[in-house]
Each structure stands twice: as C-alpha cells, then as structure tokens.
Length: 473
Image 1 (tube, rainbow, N blue to C red):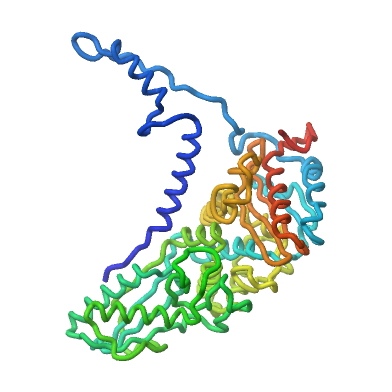
Image 2: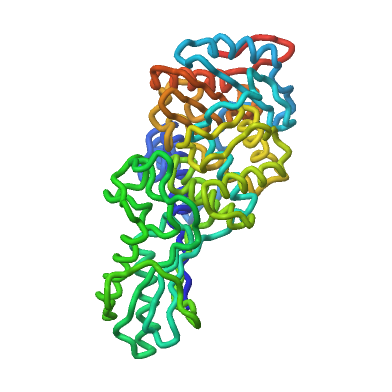
C-alpha cells in the first residue's frame, strides 16, 4: 500500500530561507542573470588578454573580494552580558505604561544557561500564544522531529464497509484526501466492489470538542479528523470562517471523491468504528513533526497546536483531551528540570486564559532548545518568526530597527495580555533567550511596540561587565 509523504511544508521553509538569503545578497549590488554586472564587465574587459594565439592562457584567479564581519561570530569567547548593564538597558523600557499593570521578564545566556536578567521572572501570568513554545517542545520530546501523523482508511474483507479514521492531522488537505480515495478505490475494484458504506472514526480524542472560546474564527472544533483545519475560505493562517463539524465535512468530501472514481456510497457517512476483520487499505501521512512545529510557531496556528498537544497526550498514555494534553505537556517538560511550579497548561494554543506560565519557564525552554545536547528541540528555534520578515513578526519591526532580522520570537496576544518570547544575538555575538509577559495593557499596538523595543535593545546591547554601558549605537 503506497504511503503519501507530504514534503510541502519543509520545501516552503527551505524556499523561504533561500529567499531571505537572496534578498540579503541582492542588497549588496546589481545582479543580472545571477552575476553581478560589475563582475561581468570586469570579466569581459579581461577576455582579450585571457586568450592567446594558440588557445587559452591560464592565469591564476584573483583573490575574491572580502568585507569585514558585521557581527562577532556566534559563540565567540566574549563574556555574557552583565546583569547590571542589562538592567540599565531594559528597566526603563519595562516601566513603559503601554505594557499595562503587570510585566515580567527573563533573559538567559544560552551558552551557560545562566539567567542574566530577571524581573518577576517566577511569577505566573497568562502566556497567550507563547504557550505554543511549551506545546511544541513537549511534542518533540514525546515523539521526535521525524514523527508523522497518519490518516487511515480501513475496509471490511468484502469491501462493503469503509471507515475513514482520523489520526489527528489538521493539515490534511484535498490532495491528501484524493490520494486516499485513489488507493481505496483501487483496492475495492480489485475486490469487485462498486458500492459501499462509509463511516468516519473520531474516537481517538475524548472530552469536549469545542474550545472554551468557541465558536470562534481563531479555532475549529478540536477533532482528530478535519480537512484543511476546518477552514472554509481556503486560507492557511489567521482567523477564518470555520466548519461547525469538520469531521463530517471531511467524510462527505471523501464520499464524493469515491463517487467520482466509480464507487457509490450508499448513504451519507456517519460516525462509527471499523468492523471486525477490517484492514487498512490507504494511508496519508502528515509532514514531519519538525515541519508541523515550525508552522505552529511561525503562523501561531491554533488548530495545529491543539493537535500537537493531543499527540503528546497519546504518546504519554493520557486521554487525548484538553485536560489529558495539559498533564502530558507538563510531565514532558518536567524532565527538562525547568521551573514548573504553578504552571498550568489549560490548552495547547494559549487561547484559554486559564493557562499560566512564568517568563523563567519560557526563556528556559528556549535555552534548552539551543542546547547542542538537545537537537530534537531545534525546530522550536527555527520555527520562531523573524522580526520584520516572517510570520506574526513580519510587519512589527521597522527596517531600521536594531531587532529587524536579529530577533526571532513567538508573539502572544489576548485582550489585555501581550507577550513576546524568543532568541536574539546580541552585539557581542552571544545567543540570548528572553521572555516578556505583560497584563493589563489597554492599547495592544502600543504594548506590542514596547515589547519589540525591549527585544531590539537586547540585540543592540554589548553590555560588557567592564564597560557597564547599556548598549551600542
């Protein structure tokens, strides 16, 4: 039985990376068909002397032009920022009234794991979408970056009953569903079947289907079977009109695909489980978990975050429910020896205000993800939006900001709640992780700008112990 392996997400990430690289190189000068015009002109001017009367002359190539480094090499033997200098740089910004009535902060030097700045860092606040850092880290710890989520079709031995079973992949799309239909019809035809009954199995999950904020355009009903995240407008991120019953919609779409391929479905599909003796006849696999994690973080994908939390629950022997997923995520993170006292994982997406995390926990998770001994957590870093370039930070940083291109961070926004947690390379080449959590802001745009200034200040900061100066210009 063929297995469909979806590589699109990884390809998109690679293309995006190449695009960023190309943009950076293009800024260095004019290009024409991949060659700098100045270099081509220089080559043309050298052509007559390069070839003599009897053939080509082989001159040694000229040295390649070079430029001085812009940044100190990452990991260079420079001291970490001095806590007093970081405090001088950050505390005036943390007093900005735009941040609301509560604000906490934690900055960690990832090379040593030492916190170099903290303010209320152990206090538990509503994390909003920054909780996705915890959700994705736990999923990677539980399943590994290569894990794929399967959607399966099983059939009775006589082919008269077919079951579409959801495995928890919200990214299942129409191409995947068509591939499942192709494989299913091929098997049924081999058995001489042209008419069947279709049911769909959503028994993998338990507990409430609706998120506490539902119905809401930010999240679909949480079910293990859905097509394109239950989105009804063809979008891939952000708020969208949602299906009231994504599993039923997916099953009906699958039934229609079977009909178009010559297998009649007797009646509309209904929920049910595979009959005795049924065996798999088709399977579609999601992209690797590493790519799903990156998509979750870059686009703050709520449906995918809830799915990953439930995958963690299933791998941990917990019920695949909001409560079971919360226990499983906490148990996985506990193994990292991080400050979890008081943390509550009410959901995987951060839409539930009942969740609570500390800045120390978030910055510590990011530091663990940067640890060379934890390569399985690296997608937590590579999935973070890049300031001024991608995801939820694409439009939040000005071109001339010190943080543009340097800050990678997960955003978090609910009414009155604003957060930012990520990594940044400071002016001395030290990789620092940070988390800022705030509550009580009245103007979300002003609060976001204040958070962005905090992260940019870390990027601009040398903050050497000897100099004691808060930053560089």
